[in-house]
Image (cartoon, rainbow, N blue to C red; front, top):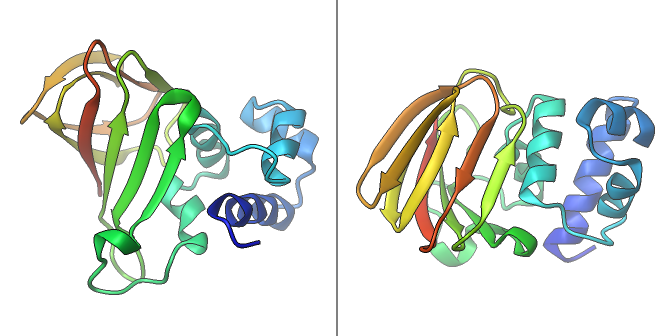
Length: 182
């Protein structure tokens, strides 16, 4: 188990087993098919952003918490080459953990890239009420959070607490942005 995908598959299997859930129980709770969960846990496929979002909501863990044990331990300085990157090639989405959370630290910074004409939707937040600060670096992004739709351009910052579903959608241009989670 050397690849990130293999380590992630094992991590997701461990969380499910620690909670005493069968694949069917997890499928029922998350809305993800049992076959998809099995394929993810066997590292046959990499989970999509939607799948990770649904699992994090079901487990009441942030996506970074799902990924944290498979990443390098906390150090005060994390060089770009050492930052964990997860990609959802099917949806043209990449997620780079710029400052992995650890110890008593609560905030984390994640850099996201979403290709043109893509949409990522989450049915529920991983942690209800989690505060987000989304800072647009380039491109444009339509964000729906808390039932409100926001059109963001480079330099804009959207601050919100997430309680319900959310959606991130690009148009003709790809989007690059930071999300600071507090």
